Image (cartoon, rainbow over all chains, first blue to last red; front, side):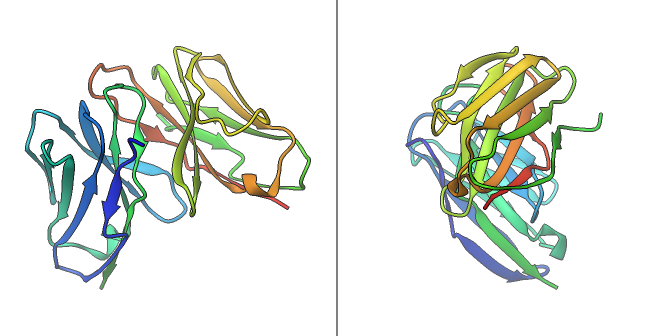
Amino acid sequence: SQQGEEDPQALSIQEGENATMNCSYKTSINNLQWYRQNSGRGLVHLILIRSNEREKHSGRLRVTLDTSKKSSSLLITASRAADTASYFCATDANNFNKFYFGSGTKLNVKP
Amino acid sequence: DAGVIQSPRHEVTEMGQEVTLRCKPISGHNSLFWYRQTMMRGLELLIYFNNNVPIDDSGMPEDRFSAKMPNASFSTLKIQPSEPRDSAVYFCASSPDRGRENIQYFGAGTRLSVL
């Protein structure tokens, strides 16, 4: 299956600490995206990284992509309680419209 | 724009009943997706449409599931007859056709409980 797998499944940290989540996938991609899902809500797009990019930043988010290892990481710096959510990676398997979502990392940021 | 709108937000029904979930995508978006989310299986793509045409329905679990997109502003996902194992949160998402960088915009979901 193309589906990505996030690691860890769950992460609990204190406010102000950094949170790192990892995603591994199986086949070649055009781009990889990260989404956030707050409890009881739909997914919200955070950031997209193209297959020819190695690193991308957006505010407190930093995403890296290693296509040779078929892996990506999402770093949230200086975490806040409001960052508490599940985070998913999504890969497109060379089909720009069809995405495969991983199982998610559940992040809990304690105030 | 109000975003992707799904209705109802919650649906409780009895086994064997027909269930219809509705979705209004963001105006101007060319692609529409139906997903199902459960604890066991995560987020699964059921079907997606491009310009109102079903492109890939390989994720539709059984013939009991059907989806339509009669026009660019409306789609339905129907389950007939429903079964308890269909209980899940169903999401609709839409995406503009921007070539290589298609971001998906999700609705708030419909939580379905089949008793």
